[in-house]
Amino acid sequence: MKHIALIGLSGSGKSSLGEMLARNLGLPFADLDEEAERETGMSIRRMFDLHGERFFRDVETGVTRRITASPMQTVIAPGGGVVLRPENARALKERCVVIFLDRPVGMIARDITYDDRPLLTGAGHLLDQERERRALYLDAADFVLQNDSGPSDALDELMKMLDDFLPKSGTGCAVIGDPITHTLSPVIHMAVFGAMDVSGWYRAVRVPAGELRAFVEMARGSGMRGFNVTIPHKSCIIPLLDETEEGAKLCGAVNTVVIKDGRLSGFNTDMGGLLSSLVSIGFGYAGRNITILGAGGAARGAAFKAALEGAESVAILGRRPEKAHEIASGIRAVSSCRVYPGEMSHREMSHAAGESDILINATPLGMSGAGSDFESLEFLRSLPRGALVCDLVYRPAETNLLRASRDLGYETQNGLGMLIHQALLADELFLERRLDMPALYKIVEGKIAK
Image 1: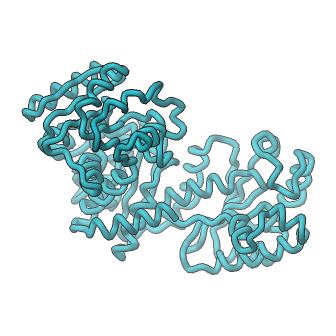
Image 2: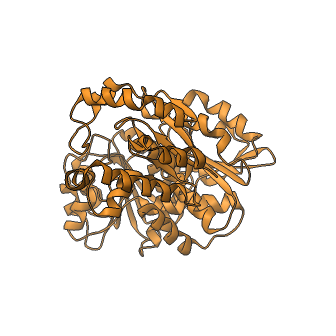
Image 3: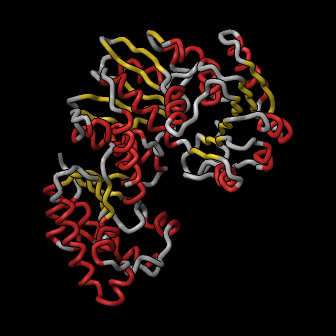
């Protein structure tokens, strides 16, 4: 398989789009400027200051030769001046599918800073570089992407351009949602496929709400093994499926769809994934008092699973308390577990925390990019000694909720464990075999860290 290289002016989006594309395809990503810095132990700025541009170009050529010669298919983001040397352009053309990110100079000048760009001191230099390099970019490129819209649109266009160069054979799976650029799913599942020596592919596919039905019908006859489902489709996909497992019906959410003989079967591995993650650090639901903050799909799944696994009690506190009461009514119909619905007020959170063995945050509060967090974390002081605080958020790795809990001496866990465990359970369904969960967990964890 050829590498995928994104070329263009400094600030055209090569690194940001390259990282998103690599995640969506489950491929490694290489920023050649970062590789040059790692190889020399110097920043780009320091290379220029101490040794001049020619020294940097020599290093850049060596890095380009090394990365493009690698047998592992990689998404590559070279520096803006990589095409100035013909040997670099040849290496890219011969060994890569090359996409020129044609971003208007005015947009670049508005967005970038110049501190770490030695050849740029302002918009005038950008215009000079555009005039000098444009023909070289066009000559090296297989495709040109007009990168003047948002990242989701640009990523969609990239995926369409690359369709003929991506694998079609072997096990085919995907994750669908909108937005989808943030997902780690391709990294996780491709790591599993690699470790299991499974030939196949796993892609992230942006499916807006109005296109869900069309995607489902396409998938039915596509030859895919299945796909994972994330927001906003976990509930609305259920009527489009041929059958849905009982657990997914109970919590009203499907995150895994298996395709077999043209039939689509829905499952929920989020519920089992969270429990497996808790068990891995010595906690479980049976006989414990559980408090869940939130009343959305994740909270509903956690609450039903806790009740069905023998929890002593489950408190569900929602920012919209009527949704918490709805979940509680559903649990009472299938379980004798004591359920307490309520509002996410400081008073009710403090009261519920006082009787909790496990407190789970199933809201986006504190998540990177969410723009909101808990107004106060004083309710944590009500937790009994030895309690666990679990936050389903995994970006950042330690939210303010977890940091405050750790400072108060409680056990903590973020959402990465659930993310990996639910993916492994989904792969058991896709591959129709039992997996060595502990061994694969370590492999995936290492892949994500890397």
